[in-house]
Length: 206
Image 1 (cartoon, rainbow, N blue to C red):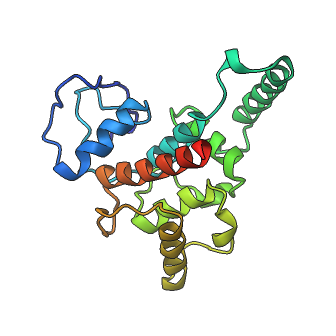
Image 2: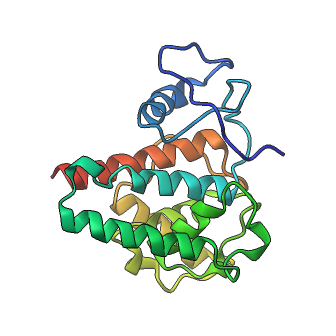
């Protein structure tokens, strides 16, 4: 199964597959922001289920969008960034973290997600497919509102699912066109990620 997403598709290029209307706006937005990339054949395979590794990668990319550009940093910020990157590099090589995935493309993204959220490593299963509730959980945990679901544990029961949905709706993380199913499609995952990124942009701009 192909997990690594390689090729950036320029906005002016025709899609190599038929994109359902409900995904066109979201897909173009995420391509423009350099969050979503296509497979080597130029497709996005929007009907495929998305794995935790892929989804967490998208969340991390959203957060990296808001880091300051190097030219805008002060001298002290550059020093701080240097030591932060050094520390992250050390963590990425830490054999105790995701030891079975050290050589996988998504390993640095998993480490970065751990750094971002302080979530426990055993809550992440990179090759498992997500449902809507699990995806929203990972988004909320990466947001300022993570305290609202801090007592949620897996597997999710009905009460936990209800709390996650209410939190997602109240903080505008929940897309109108999302479909409930056992496995979250890549297309619906892109809808979620668009809402998450737009929410972060609104916070920054306001």
